[in-house]
Amino acid sequence: MKNKLSLIFIFIAAVIFFRCKKDASICDAYQPIIESKHLIDISILKSIAPELMDTITTHSNLQVYRLINEDNLIIIHCNDFDKDLKNLSRQFTFEKNLKDNSIFSFETYVHDTLSTSSKPTVSIVRAIEIAKATINFNGICPYYRLGIYNNFVPSEYRLVWYIQDKKDNMHVMIDAKTEKVYSSFDGKIYN
Image (cartoon, rainbow, N blue to C red):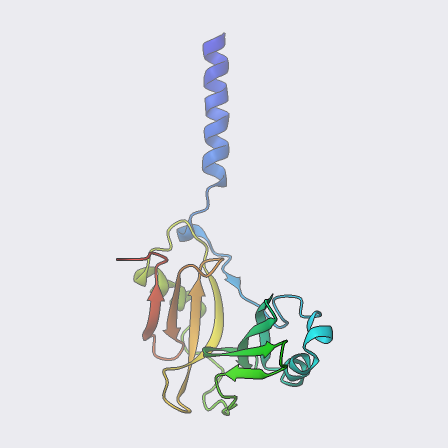
């Protein structure tokens, strides 16, 4: 009797374990990344750095993803968007020294006009195939976004698919018109 119960228990445990395991090769529900608002609460800026709050709210293309408030210094890191496409080549940092109220910004704010079409010719399905051939996404359902990329050549933006795992520990950036892989990172640090 004990042997039968043990076998039944092992069978049920095995069914549950293997049923819950996700396999990227059968994952057809790829997840789009949709970020249109700030990724963190920025309400503290109203009282301690109203001029930075004004800058961020005036420029709707900026999206705050990190805010550091320590030792009389406020540091704000922002993503940049153009036509609802994340600019994967540019970010902005603003700092305010609370002792002397001085403000610094890194990355000169030059908002180029997007000179490429925002319609991809490479499908997301094909982009994910390329991403899977580039790095190992086994066991992971990819997340994706359409963005723009500038390889430090002024006004030469490329429309790209950005394929990543949920936490962006690994990613592949693929030209959405030519299938060229611009960058990839498998999440591993090599010495």
